[in-house]
Image 1 (cartoon, rainbow, N blue to C red):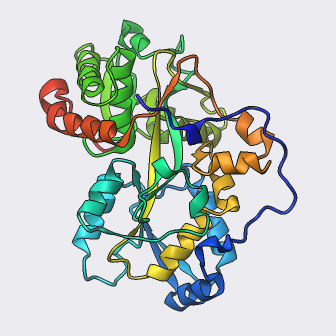
Image 2 (cartoon, rainbow, N blue to C red):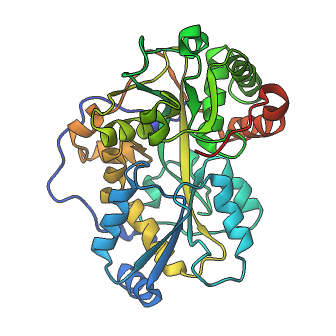
Length: 372
């Protein structure tokens, strides 16, 4: 099991230094003035699968619009999965219209596979050197941007006591209450939730944890505790899935959105704390490649990285920001903790997990995930 040093959150971060370094570093030779002009000439950026309540994407998008008002953002399929993002690229090769995505945000395991398929084009952002080596393709086809930890969002109006572990979820008092934030066969966050359940049972990250996780969900389904729907804020609030397993930042965002109606508690399970990294990339067939590059510069600037923290996500350049005392203490204090040691599965382990789940979910668990 691999621990990535760049993912460690440390205490004692000082207050935000005056004048964040929003300007890009000259080391990569990026001509920002020329890039902005080229992007504005294109006039549009097409994104895909970026829900505004996911990791503060609403704030990230608004900040980009404020900086570059001449560039329209065309948002496709905000609730789409990583697999659906790649399919949209495949389906629109040669299409320069509004259905062809320029940029992608996918789970870690999807980046290298998309690169191998020729779906991505390389680009190194100005802050490239501060992105840890084990979080990026050396040629710039994909690079990690943020990560979260698998957690349970619990509607405490309907659930008492609040479960604190995966083992708790098998108890009869949670009948008809437990859901996933996606379909584990196609959704990275749901697949990582299955791995987490397997790690809680002692499985090593990768195929072993996936198999153990499938066994867990088979038991959960047989007990009548699992609700096979694509969970959301609505299903959490309405009681369809009053216990929703997803990334911690999604749970915290839902809690804030609901504002106490109903009250929501977000718990990282005591028997497994598993982190998952998401990566950014530019489509090899992007109709607006310069706008796509400018979007990446925005995401990997100090400003963009801190916007992730505002949405309860840990940014990939966190170590660099901390070293320069550029992180407000209150943003770090908002993140949930766990008594379990955080596990950071490697790319190979995530790929093995995803493949095992795709091949085994139907036969082992036998629950068809219905849309909300």
